[in-house]
Image 1 (cartoon, rainbow, N blue to C red):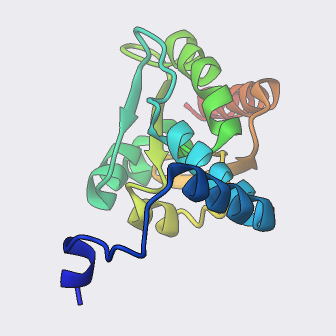
Image 2: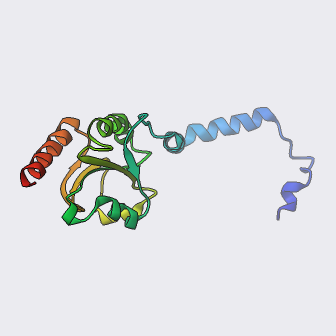
Image 3: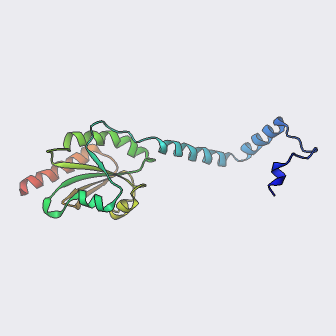
Amino acid sequence: FFSVFLSRPPPHMTFDPASIYASVVEFLGNHQGLVIVVLFLLYQRLKASRPMPEVEGANIAQFTSLAEFKEFLGKKEDGKLVVVDFFAKWCPPCRACAKPYGQMSIAHGGEGKLWSFAKIDVDTAPEISQWAKVSSMPTFKLYKGGEEVESMTGFAEAKILAKMDALAAEVKKDS
């Protein structure tokens, strides 16, 4: 079968570049929808291959293992406060909120501060996103002592900060 393609073409078959070009143009003209879909998919693939925007000095942990993530969240007794961003590299809103989230982690997280921050790529850590019941991105979840206390779909920095402040005030009142 392949020998047909590997051998020289018969004399009656000529490969005229102009006729090949005309055939390609005719095909593309007759299949515009297919061309648009293929170009869109290639564009999405290219966008997803770019690295996520990052903020230098951000205090954000990333996990792919459910066991490590659960350990990071802490136990009920310790009351650890954690903000988690569930994202996907191909998601435009996720890309848009990456830098503000990084800046939040600098302002509110890190050594000696009340909050810890994490990011979970739903494509590389499906076990974690399934455990957390994440169905859309970006999703932000607040945890206290390993238990989810708040979940928000979409990025509204003021809303997230307000929820963080309310939870922090509750923790300070209890201690």
